[in-house]
Image (cartoon, rainbow, N blue to C red; front, top):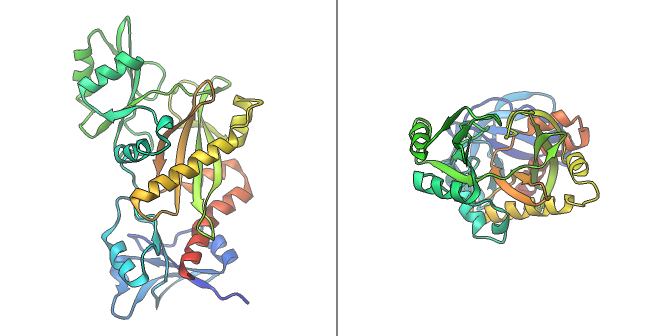
Length: 337
């Protein structure tokens, strides 16, 4: 009979991490929710919540030999201290909230540069340059999430137009100075300007692709889930979607006769590898991709703490089980090597 292996879930809050119990049982994993305050450094023990296979109990157990970081943000100081005990690379997802500007520079310095839309830090001068070159530009915060404060700006013969969430402008201006004065109410130096990529559409609704890239039980990157968010009919962004469908279905419907699936997966895996080289140990990320009208792939952004719950909308039991299993399988691998 296979012996259970303890896997730590490093979090700021002592609470059950529901959703992982079934995966843990299937993999022979004992989950231990670990918070920094409850680690007993001298004895290398932790007072945590333990999933025994049937219920969560509060008890003292040996410090797990590998951990899955569930803090949201930059690398927590606790990771370095734990790695002094457990060994290097025994804790994955060092960074879970990516700085979009830093990540853009990482990708732009790699072979993926042709797939990254031109991006720079916000300034009125930079915005004027983007509008002159491309007529459209996206403005978004370096550390934003969930599509909050994502603006679209355009320029044409009638002037300058500002959009927020909708294809219809919220305001228009006759001069560039009027536009930038308005933007100063919301835009800070920590905003980015990115070339706007006109997305391909399904039945008139724009869509993107989200690849969940995770390490498997041997530590190799794989695409464990692929979905497409189809935008509301009036929106140019997919963060608030009309529907969620499988990525394979979206590709087949939007580009019949073209085999783009393997390229999408390869780009996503390469992106995870490039990010990890600079950011430190990772075990999962999601990669948001855009396809333009010609089927060209563009990397829009990465997420360091992917929301697995969105995969429930696919009603695909196999995929849903896999996205929860992979990080535990990888952690189990780390704990036994």
